[in-house]
Length: 110
Length: 115
Image 1: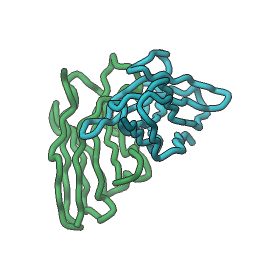
Image 2 (image 1 turned 135 degrees about the vertical axis):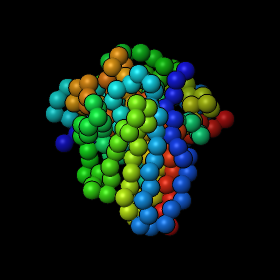
Image 3 (image 1 turned 90 degrees about the vertical axis):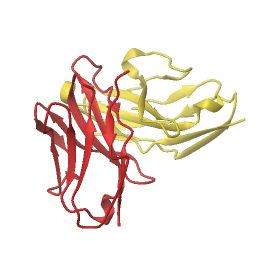
Image 4 (image 1 turned 45 degrees about the horizontal axis):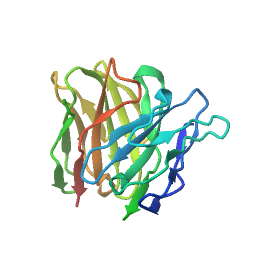
């Protein structure tokens, strides 16, 4: 069965420090992975997707099929990055479903 | 920018009562979802809906739950007889035909408190 694991419930760093939010997945097919973010009092929204290999707000994530990982990284954290981050796996084609990890709360201190 | 809207934002109900949570997906979207998040836990998939029928449902989505698209705009989640453990934030999401698969657009959620 498909599963997404985020081992850290909370990650606290100082402004300017590097950040890595870990995500591992389990899926027998070809995975489509995403990072969603939820800022305080805002709705859940897409941050980035592995297929586009883009950098959004300084964040990047590389799919490592060998390690079944999709860690989210940013070299220099900003206070406005403080939020809940959810790794998600989409499966089943265009009518498919999205399942989430438990989420990691990132707190960036001044 | 079009958004998914949900009502009510917060509902308090007595155990055993029926609850209907409403969602208005983005107008040209075709696939609809309900998720829930119990306080302190992860966002869990409940059900997906396409072409006026359920595409997939999770183990959580038992006979107490039902979904409906009664008209061209609303997408509702009904809980027939609420239990204490149904207390959670319920999120509606939608995705369009031309959207990237997996790029769901979420509403702000409806908080359900069962007493």
